Structures are given as C-alpha cells and as structure tokens.
Length: 552
Image (cartoon, rainbow, N blue to C red; front, side, top):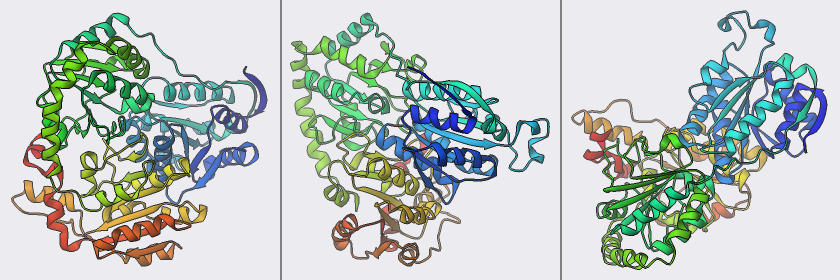
C-alpha cells in the first residue's frame, strides 16, 4: 500500500528510490546536486554510495552493477560537464539494453529564461539525453518526483530495459510537498497469443534442422530455465548473440556459443529454421546485416516493434520471453518429431566439434576460464585478445560476462568491473583490459582501494591500439598512423594507488599470478607485456577478417 510523506523534494527522491529497492549509487557531489547528496546522507540508509574519480566511470559502474545483479543502480552527476562525462556510459546502456538511472542536478528554475550557455554548468539535459535514453525528463515540482521514478522503473522492469535520465533542479529538491510514495513497480506481463505459439511449435517441429538463436532478451527475462527445457525437449543447438552469452551454459552439449564463432557458423549454415529469442539483430551480430538466415524464421520478442524489423519472419510472438518459452515448451515436449530433430543434428555437431577442437586457443583467456569458478565474472574491455572471448571464452551462468557489445566503449571495463564486484561480492571478478582502454579508466583504482573493492585487473600491454593498427594497415595499403602508445610503468602506477601489482613476462607464470591475485585481500593488477607478440595478436583479431571488414 502506498504511504504518504510530507517532506522536501530531496527526501522524496530518496524515499522513492528506497521503495524501488535501490542499493547502489555511484557519483560525485557538486554545486547543483549537493541537495541530492544531503538528502542521501540524512535519509539514505540502505543505499551505499561510491565516490567516483571521474563521471565517465559512474555510468559504467552502474551498468556493470545492473548487468551482474539484474537490479537498477543509480549514477549521479552535476549538469553540463558532469552529465556529458557520464553520457558515454549511458549510450552504452541504451545500446546494450541495461537499466541505469542517471540523476542530474540542475540550477534553480528561475534561471530557465537564460540561455543555458550563459549558466554555470549550463545545459538543457533533456534535449541532450533524449536520443540516448528511454526517457529523459525533468521534475518541475517535488510532487512530480514519485511519478517520474515510477515511470522510470516501469521502463526498467517491463519489456526491453534501457537507461533513464531525470533532471532535478535545486529549487525542486528544496521545496516541500505532501506526496504518495509509489510501491515497488511490478513488471507488466502481456498475454501471449496462443495461436502464435502453436504456429511457432509447428514451424519448429516440421523443420529438419532447427537452430535456436538466443539474445540478451533471454538473460534480461530470466528465461534460462525455460531455454534449457526447450533444448532438452527439442534437441536443437543454441547459438548466441554477444549479449546472449550465458543464456545456456556453454558446457551444454548443444551450446555452440557466439554467432560469429567457428562452431556456430558451421551449424548455422546447415539449419533450415531458426527460433530467435530476444535477438535485436545488431550490426555486429549480423556482420552488417550480411548474415543469411535459414529459410524459416520464428521470432520471440518482448517488443512488438522488433518482430520482422531486420529480417522477415514466418511467425512472430510478442510478450515476455520467459512466459512465451514456457508455453512453447509445453507444446513441443514429448512430440515424436523432437527425436527426429535431435538425431538430425548428432552427426553434424560431432563433426563440427571435432573440427573446432583442432583450432588454436586464445592466449590468457583459456587459462582464465580454467582459473575462475563457474560463477566468476569476466569483465572484458575492448581489446585485441578480448574480441575472441565471444566465441572462445565459455560462459556458464548468466550475468557472469560483460562487454560493451554494441557501442564498443573503449575504457568501460575498470568501472564496470567495480560495479560488478559490488553487485556480486561473493564472486571473483576479473577485469581483462588492454593498455589503451586501461588508461581511460585507471583513475578508479583509487576508488577501488578506498572502498576495499577486491577485484583483479589484467592489463595486456603491447604498446599500441593494436586492433586499430591492424584495421588501418588492412584498409590503407599497410599504412598506419598514431596507434603506438607510450605507457607508464603500469606496475608502479598501480602500486602508487596502494594495489598489489606484478608484471608477468613469462606466460607460463600467468596462472600462478592470477591465483595469487584472486586470493589477495584487496584490488590487484597483473600486467602482461606482449610487445613481441603484437603482430601475432593482430592476425588473430576476428573482425579483421577481410569479409568482416567488407561488412563494416
């Protein structure tokens, strides 16, 4: 039951967030958001605040927290440069469909008649953020705050999630009001069309070799058990998008990992029907929409606008993927055609797996998978070895793998790893980052040390923006420019923050170093110099394949 509260706008805001179960807050106080922080200090019991060193990181920390936990985290900035610093992470959350709430303080509304460019930290936040959020709004009175927070959490918890930005002028935070505090917003579940489910079941059961294509919508909906049940009933293999990794444990005999990997591509070419589950068909997952789908396409999605948007469909089912999958399983389980489907895949999959086993393993990632437990979280930045993680780093549980999949935001990983560790304190968290990306977020090592956030950063240091060097060389007749890096002593750099740090030049020592870092009491860093392997690393970058470059 909703409760009545008479208070100032700042307290109303905090009580609304607590009612929605918010537990983590990342940000930096400043003139226009000091009243938000004052309200947090007075009324925010149960919400943990973490002071970032750069607003660039606060939205990535909230993103990492949300992906690891499935819950919403809050990022808080001042307007103007504070908000624009955080905007990169907000774009990342929009493109990867992650629930992040950005609260932006703002000057008193009496200044609204002035040009924003003449005001201290001046910026019209709603105009700036409307194209990179699901909702960009401003509270013009304290009475509006509960409705805005409820609207934001409705977006977070129903359908496909994404970020929300709310501006809060200082006079709104100071003014008093009597409001009804909203109850925790529950997901809205639309009815599933029984006829569409039946058509989907018939399409799958009449196919010779159907394949299941699992996207981030499976993990967002928590539909992993239903997916396992469908696989057990149907006997069809599962291929994933980048965000779909972990939808089905990748040690399952019918899991083939990422769509752009060797095993998945081989199976995809032999399929005559595809069931896509919560797949958005992004440019990266489809290689610039050059991916050819099997003849019959059945699509399940929570957003009706996605059905048939990128590829034609034979059958479309709109609604919660978890419920839709449950109803589909009930239609196909026990059908005699399922054994025929399973049998049709046995020999092709055995051949594919035998060929895949002969392919070389990626350096470091293979050892990491062996060292991390099943619930260990890998937060992978944009880096040359990390590109191979989609197809060659097995993920066993949902919410244990992070990558900025669509925006491909260099430097996201340090902040995201901190957020993930705060969300999952019981799980080991490893940040796997190149030297270029590391220095974009490295200031947050100070924050991690201050709060005792125990995670491991592994920096592969080859002294270059290697992927860009490779792409320049491939597209510019061997020429490249401004991709070599002059790095500091990364071990001394980390030690200056108070971290445990070591350099591992002999890769045979890498497992030993990781074990010691995981056992350490506090954040650790491992530098792996790879200058002498730069050319080899570039050759193994998947998207530098000539066919990839044509698609891009």
